[in-house]
Image (tube, rainbow, N blue to C red; front, side, top):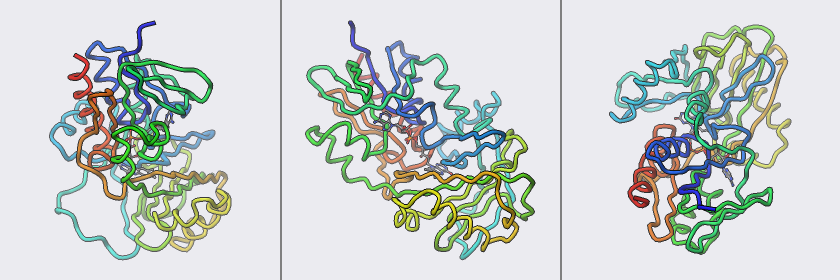
Length: 326
Ligand SMILES: Cc1cc2nc3c(=O)[nH]c(=O)nc-3n(C[C@H](O)[C@H](O)[C@H](O)COP(=O)(O)OP(=O)(O)OC[C@H]3O[C@@H](n4cnc5c(N)ncnc54)[C@H](O)[C@@H]3O)c2cc1C
């Protein structure tokens, strides 16, 4: 059987951006992800009537290229501006460049746009890649015992997970090994009536919590009162192996100290651990490529961090792979 041109590991922003680009150039592309759907760290969890963007909260568009794409998505109704009533608890961070921040969200959840990218692509979910090996072509070994072969591979998992697949013998290993990622505990809360706060989103610059947002205040999220709370990197790191129930109770306690309006008992309470949330010191390389073995590595941490970085890293990787395979 003819090998697939490119196997992309990861159905987040970087992977699906690259896969769409490569497929549009006529290459055969397969996307594998260990999760049950697209999104990665830009995911949406639905439980009954509640909906939570429990990873990425919103995105901004700074570069001209990304701004142009965002305009097209907005015109197509796939993205909308979010204008929460904002508060800051604790010391205010130093002001940025003073320009107003345009906060954008995908519709109807943060994975909405990625679901759209995935349509028409060969995306296979619940497929964890255990190991990849190069012997003239790439051999991928999956957790379910199946194997796939491709001419090129694009890895978009966070660096620690990419290293686990690649092993230590590949020339790109050393570049991946040097990138540290901060963890983040996320708490999802559902209430049976609106919480009477004077804010929809808050930056928290104190020990413990870092961010609080009323998911319901984002466009087209439905009306069930859903909140997402993120803990800071240090606090999360110290409790990385704690039971989710203990973490949830402690975060709810801190939220109530911040604002007693949260004193009603939530009808739904879930904690989720993001072991690799954000890069400590992101690179600005666009992507990494080893031409000899036709391996590319992309992700937010390769290109300045966050969703815009993941998108631009996916674009960079697709262009370089396309040039290599022509
Ligand atoms: C709590 C939190 C808050 C954030 N807030 C914001 C924000 O407000 N604004 C913003 O712009 N960004 C934010 N970010 C960052 C943003 O989510 C990321 O920059 C972006 O989603 C990264 O996309 P990516 O494609 O590079 O990686 P990912 O989204 O991590 O995609 C990698 C994919 O690889 C898959 N994978 C990993 N290992 C394997 C394997 N062995 N086999 C198969 N599949 C595998 C994973 O399941 C995942 O789907 C936040 C992130 C977190 C966690």
